[in-house]
Image 1 (cartoon, one colour):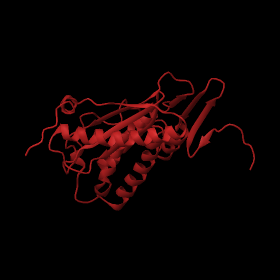
Image 2 (tube, rainbow, N blue to C red; image 1 turned 90 degrees about the horizontal axis):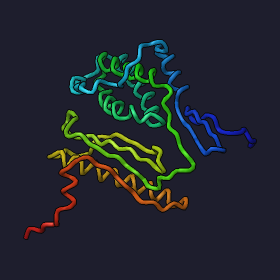
Image 3 (tube, rainbow, N blue to C red; image 1 turned 45 degrees about the vertical axis):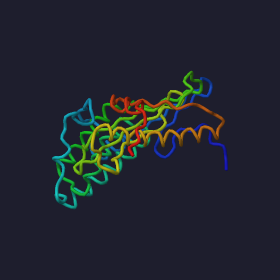
Amino acid sequence: MKELGAISKFLGIDVKQDLNSGVTIISQKDYLRNILSEYNMLDCKTLSLPIDKNFNFHILKRENSESVFIENKCRRLIGRLMYAAMGTRPDICAVVNILSRYQNSASTLLYKILLNILRYLKGTLDLCLIYYRDSNVDEIIGYVDSDWGGCNDRKSTTGCIFKVFGSSVMWFSKKQATVSLSSTEAEFIALCSATSEACWLKDILFIFGFDIKIVIFEDNQSLSRWHRWPLVILE
């Protein structure tokens, strides 16, 4: 074993550290450039969003894939995008998660949408995550949300991101396991999932000597009122 100096890259993630100022910056610029090069999109036109906000995902549903060739192309690109989404690009986490559900019914349209995500990434290559050694934020702060019945099987999707000492450290987007009968129920399931992850984060930080509180933000008014109601027991 030998000393190789400050870390600069780890599993495809670019790392820049300034130990004097206590700042660490991580990104996947080189990784994304390699993907763009692989798909001949280094000089492509860029998009301001990874997908149109009004796009109807239901039109992607098919009985079978158009062809094995298209399915393999979609699976490969989704895998590449998923690694970026899990590494340093939470901004594409939700859309990649949703599109991954249609791998078994891959189509030319799905592949085109995936390429549009590359157009978005081309215009946002410089986006990165910044972590500060000194921070005046001493809380685990989470933001959680859910749609209602947005999937083809009427299940909802949870989205969540957590910040520790002011910087994003964990995020996810996933389909809920059960069908919710109301938007409030979907939001409650999402909040439970987020709380579970927050407790895990709190335990990890406690091991390192940090005993900090958890704050989770949710935007559903019915859910906010729900937890204030007294418990009613029917006999």
